Length: 121
Image (cartoon, rainbow, N blue to C red; front, side, top):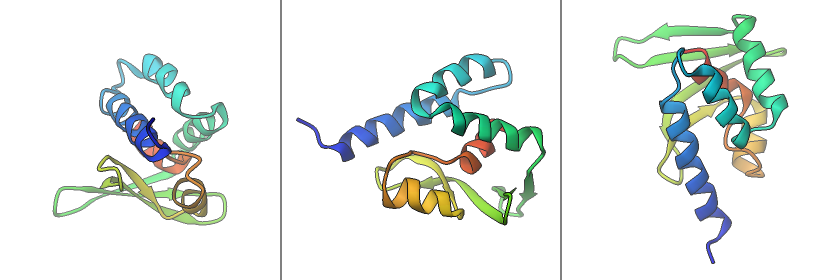
């Protein structure tokens, strides 16, 4: 019997695959697949951030984009592609929701600010 860490690692690998295959042409299909991983409120929140142009993208000299998300009370940095404990490269966000939901309670794989970075590309 596998433990929850192994299960989360497998789910993270599937999520990473869905995100990597997401393009403008496959957006509707990708959103349907993302519903498996995230509650509707998180997906709608990420889409709302995209619609409101709440992301600032900085092109760095070393070739990796830097993202800032304009939240309702603060601006947060999102770092896509950082390796997680399971070896997957989803995203890290400096927002309090990420610290609680992803790191402390491990109830989510990602928060809307981090998901928005992938959806907005």
